Image 1 (tube, rainbow, N blue to C red):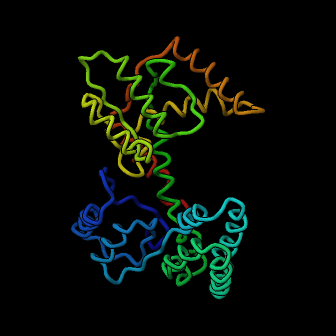
Image 2: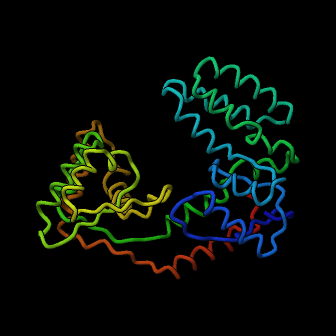
Length: 307
């Protein structure tokens, strides 16, 4: 963000991991392009990014994204306390003055250390970096508290990357009440039985623990033709099955009203039967050049906006 409030995308790259070295390479490339030392970096709390920024610019002020931190705290709180936790947190973050933020911060920590130790410990760990925005003029707080501007780019990137989808059989799309390793092994066995023996089976999956369970790994070791490729962290949208979930949501569940889980499952099964009569193979329809061209057009649209 420039001094006049204009937002400019300076660098974009694909990386398999968000390690300190990967971030350091990106940061150093900016420095090599004679980018002056920034006054503030708003980040999501990734330790590799924070370490790389501090290594390149030791005096750089860091602001932890307040939205990401709220999600972290909610994940650590019991379900019955989450609504109250979110209200207390927002009341603190959106206080009208620096003094109000500090006063609410003291009360928030005192209250939640007693009510939920995990929430209190996580909040303390964030430290002063969660409140760096208060050292800037209050008129800039809205833009400095979160990484929303960047998240919007990521969301548009996902939305505008289109695919066409199909799945091989109804057996491969059965609804299961829980996503456990037993069900995943059953799915793998079904593939192994139904795919011709002379073919390899390559699966793309996210890093969910079920996909890496010791019994799953043992089964894969006994069936070397079945290979799982894991998408990088925070990149599950690269998994084409996510496009399939999007189709189910759009055509089967979003506009429906269901009185029970059974009704929802029946509706999904009906959609699967209809879809499989007219299915086509999954195919990535966008080229890399077209994706980057769309991203450039998006950046032109959002640059210079005040929100």
